[in-house]
Image (cartoon, rainbow, N blue to C red):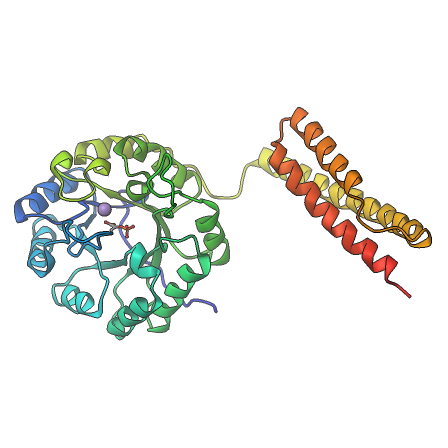
Length: 356
Ligand code: PEP
Ligand code: MN
């Protein structure tokens, strides 16, 4: 299904800088919200985030201040002129946030994974045109992510964007949530005009990894960033380890290198032509290889031999793997290339052998 989109039209930090949404993981007290917001606004941030309802993995954690915090966000808007953004997970949240004039809503990762919840939110949003940002589901399922976009768009909302916050894994490695960059990249390929925001805070779970993840999102051509910033991160009531003070955020943003996404220079065009030629060569070589495979199949047919001869297959995979590694490619890469070639070769041989 094609999405019917309109631009989000959100303010960037400047014409040449990405759109940045910043603020604490959770609104805790009116003082913490105002203190953080004033510092962010002073540094040029135009959109303020704060979680009012917090979905927690286990009960007993801080589940957000709830409705009490919504007037604090209205106050931020009045005092600083920043737009406000918060997470909604139910129809009731939608109703309350709209009543308090919150400017941007996002759907959290745990909610995106639940089509019933997303549909309930979509129904509650009907008739409005508030910008909606949809976080990736906790599990790496692009169709589920796209399904959520389709449900919200189906309710008539056109100002949509997505947030890449990484995916849960059983074993925690470097990141709290593995980025699996190929998933947002594929989403961008399928829906080129859909704005993508990077969420380095929830990907990393650690403040020292925010800067490189911001840069990576920019290098991949993402449109904006959503970053957790708190006036006193170590004392934060949720996600303390991943939040930074507004001045550190400002420093991180000032160091970002924004590369042009426009089509490349003369030399890039030449290099791309070169790649096109090599790709054509690859296809020709593969065609020749398949032709020989078919000749081998004729021989096997005449001599009543099986198509797959395991020793030969293992020899190919081992030798090509070693050869590829000598040329700086990963053994796994070469293995998967030759497995794919072998599979196609077997398919063609079976065709020959089974031909009347
Ligand atoms: C958040 O943005 O504070 C949040 C709860 O994020 P996620 O849904 O990505 O876990
Ligand atoms: Mn958080």
